[in-house]
Amino acid sequence: MALTESDVRHVARLARLGLAAGEAERLRGELASILGHVSAIAALDLEGVPATSHPLDLVNVLAADEVVPAAGVEAALANAPDPVANGFRVPPIGA
Amino acid sequence: MTTYEAVIGLEIHVQLRTRTKMFCRCPNRFGDAPNANVCSVCLAHPGMLPVANGEAVRQALRVGLALGCRIPERSKFDRKNYFYPDSPKAYQISQYDQPLCAEGAFQVPGEDGGFVVGITRAHLEEDAAKTIHVGGEAGRIAGSGSSIVDFNRAGTPLLEIVTEPDLRSGEHARRFLTLLRATIVATGASDCDMEKGTLRCDANVSIRPVGSTGFGTKCELKNMNSFRFLERGIAAEIARQTALLEVGGRVTQATLHYDPSSESLTVLRTKEEADDYRYFPEPDLLPVAPSPTLLEELRAGLPELPVARIARLRDTYGLPDATAATIALTPSLADYYEELAALTGDPRLAANWTMGELSAHLNAASLEAAASPVTPPRLAALIALTVAGTVGSNAAKTVFGELVADPAVDAATIVERLGLAQVDDADELGAIVDAVLAANAAEVAAFRAGKVQLIGFFTGQVMRQSGGRADPKVVQALLNDRLR
Ligand SMILES: [Zn+2]
Image (cartoon, rainbow over all chains, first blue to last red; front, side, top):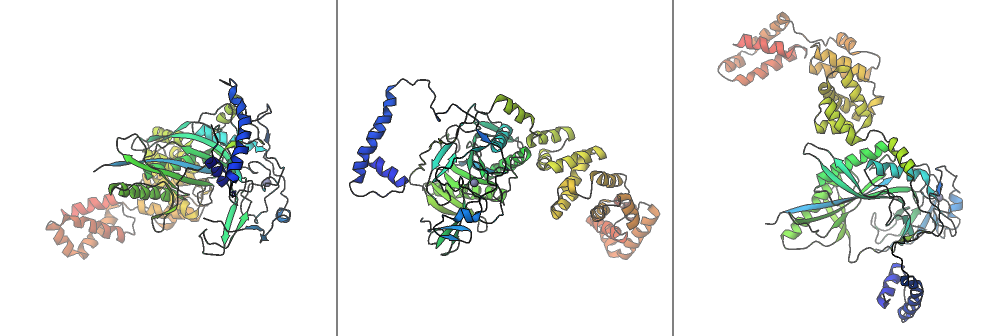
């Protein structure tokens, strides 16, 4: 399935990326080459082979439901660019 | 004119009752200072790895088993990508094509024969952070000054339950959700409190001509926070869509909010294109594969579920479905009822008291039945006095109030102390009847002239003169005798 410029624009929009003039065409080429690499798998006969969701052959790696004390508000907000009243202030959310 | 039927499916989010969050070991707790319960994992600091909470998996499986779901041999987690400040990773860990619990069927009993709701799936995911909008216009996102994010809720475990579009009315939706809630509460997986937001419900509503098997354009009703609003919101949306189609219009796919105070629907946004979350498998988490032994253990550990208890109360005690359902939905009330039914030997009378005076008292005092000062033996003793004719129905209510007020005293003592014993002595009551008739000569004449409904007036007067203690049967007999 060929990748189109409108696919590129759609994915860019989902990722909230602005594209400059000409970028969509350039990225279409780059992305198509990456996807083309992965699509080599399509040449194989995979009838009846379940999809791999994880490379490790492990299941049920679960944690016990026991609280580990949290780092605290101060540590949590240490990297906040604009903390206010124990909260992270962020720009208004556009509609 | 075309007649339409509604096609409704629900999406329910249940906050699980674990000690820690879904993928980190921060406390899963509300009411703390903002950002007190956060760590590098739930703040999405680079390089941090999630580990799934084993207890959340067990609770979700208990719910799945209670809903009659098939539990697949293996399930996995996926990333649901979206950008919003309530999601620090810019994706939510959820389950896409391999949910923990697959298709099930849930029976909702009722006087009308009941109905079955298919469960499409139930899967685990993490909740988002809470954002508070400050500045700008109150309550409106557009034009607000800024948002403040509290990550305490971020990463807390949610079970999302999706139903098939099997519901046909707001009433069905309410009945289904009421029973679903009671079932989940019975498993112990959540307290399912809609006011606290530990149970949230969205509804997908469309309509189609009766007899058609296709689907109309559906609209999504968001976050209805009570059973009553769920029922009313769906009814309002069905009416809105029907009105549109009847004038030749068409339904546009949209997300709506129902405002119960004005009983109106507001369009939050219309959907020009389908949501696109670019789901892909979560590489940081391993699949979950519940063993048959674990499933057997969880199944064996389930309590008697509400749907089974409704059937048992109906069959064992001969209660009507609606009564059985009301009692069975609250386990402690059902336990109380069963003890009372056994003590009195009269299941119907026990049900009347349980649904009537007892429930009113429990609601007024916000008590669980087990915590009521009126224990089943104390109430049974009062019921025995009514059956024996010692107290009439009004006096019995007074006695009940006294049982609530003074946990140390028994019904017989109250009756004696307050002189509430029913008077059935024909001489004593006969004197009152004679006095009432003498004082109301005009009414007596009217009665004799054919105005027979005045018998109620005379009875009332006698009851009042006796301080409510007269045995109504004796009064009837005396009045009939005197007025003949
Ligand atoms: Zn955390």
